[in-house]
Length: 251
Image (cartoon, rainbow, N blue to C red; front, side, top):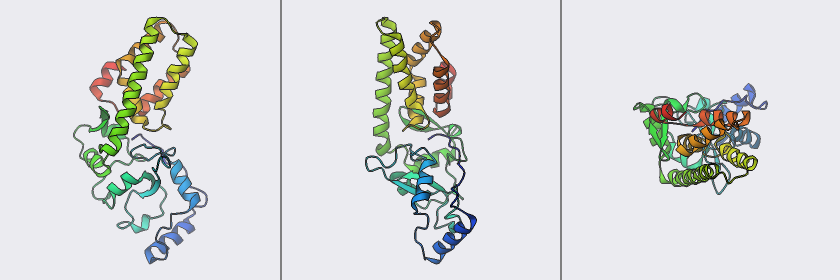
């Protein structure tokens, strides 16, 4: 999970339209008044085509997007068409959260909360920061550590570690073409961009690997660390959910 900015609402989502559709939902005329192509596309774009909670890429490999109501429609019908209450979610997160009353028992909303304040990632699992009850509740209500998510996250993390170790070996061996090497390294760092799947996991894995620190130091020593690399590293820092103790020793 990464911090997300709420974009401007679609022009079609006028106050009159919201009022009309909300009333239709409350009257039972429309069961799903938010199920409109232009609105679904706008919601999907809020999190770069990913689930705003689990960060899985939506509409790929049967991971269909569902429009999730952060404040459940059964409890807060007046907010059923409210921009900012309609979030892009994968089926797993939406089904697990169900009608949990987020008004009475809040969970982390990446559009209003900074996940860094509640979680860190360790061995591909979401861990609670400072025993936060809100963080604990979020992990449970969204099943963020269920095997459905944990198994693919583990696979992604292992792939990143192997690639980093290979890159570290290549730079130490002095048997690499440096311009091509830099391109390879940048391609890896770009996988932790906020628009990419599992950005928080990828960014955390990269920044906490000793091989990344070694490559970082060597490139600085050889004056090969350029502005693009610095921007990529800053993007990783934005997306990462790191253990504070580890962060202080590596960055």
